[in-house]
Image (tube, rainbow over all chains, first blue to last red):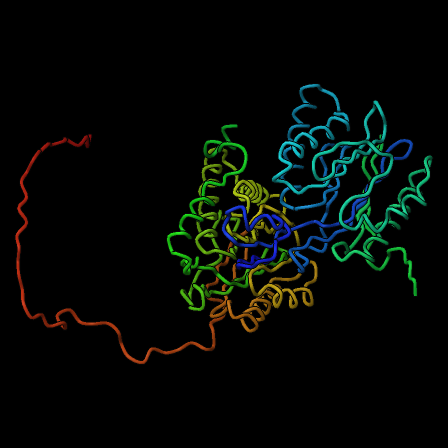
Length: 235
Length: 275
């Protein structure tokens, strides 16, 4: 990770063009971002989540084996995109709040509760934070669920959701290939394929594909290394 | 809570008090150059090997284009089993690691346990995130505890990465090339030391902000080897003459003695309890 302190006119990725006029000292730090591609899919009985593994500081890859699938609770995970520091901080806070809540209730927490905790933090501090999060997990009441909490702090439940800078390249693929009623293996293949395609096209995504499936039985994690990724060459 | 409570919990939310002060200070100089913070313009690296962790650093501290300190110590002590390399603003890394070290010492005394590396990382992350990047500290934390050998990096904004090998500072790209080429999981001690030495050497050779000697710190379960310097710079300059002056060498032309009038205002005697 490099720390570059220098005065320059162009806006830094973190604060945008407004930072010059805000009266703040004119320094631009390259922030560590997880620009990423993340994806989460519901199936009957659980969810499959996936992410790439690249963290960048400007043009330098600070960590090429990042784990962006963060455990919030036993059967609730989140996929992080945006500023690495912000998302790590929020995830820790939510994990604490959810753990406390679960102990008070003496039962496993709901995915909807976790999603709402994320939304509460992301919406309240929306001006200061850059965090796009997918919350996914399994609970007894509604089974597998995927909630999307993008930048700004919206909350919406979706059967399949993608996020991060690389997501723009795979909306079409997702719309064409996702069908309701897929089973776990099909979801895994779909996620792996979608992430590979996004990593191929997006400079801020790359490395390995990390997958996880969450169901009543528990969490199963998988890593697909670079040379094992599905290949889609156009030439 | 008593065990983990080290200082009083700071007020929640972000703290931007110093940005206003910094902006005001800049105004004082009428658009001229503000004094530059002493940066360590550094190469630091760390590698996890079979029995522990090896940390390495160069020893040059720069202030603008001048080398301010040729023998700067960039590997800071955190606890008997945890050491931390710091890149970025020298004052920030010094103070942050000092604060961390004190807090972990208090924790150790309170709980009777050796601190874990992940604890140090969490405390640092919390503090740096709260200051929202205003503390310019890029840190590599390495240590051995009951859960194993760990190497973490913490960025100025509070992002944490756990990796088996890494380098930071202005010379990080050069050092990382060496590390990527030479790293294997479960290295032995000597190859690991040699790898880190070569990585820092690459940083020194290819980066103007890094230079002088190489410090190495080997942390294993049994002991810590802080080797300073591990390798000295081959470009050391020898002083041409002695700069020490004997007392009495400076001739003085006139002498004027003015006795200070002191009056005793209050005198109190306090008996010391020696029993």
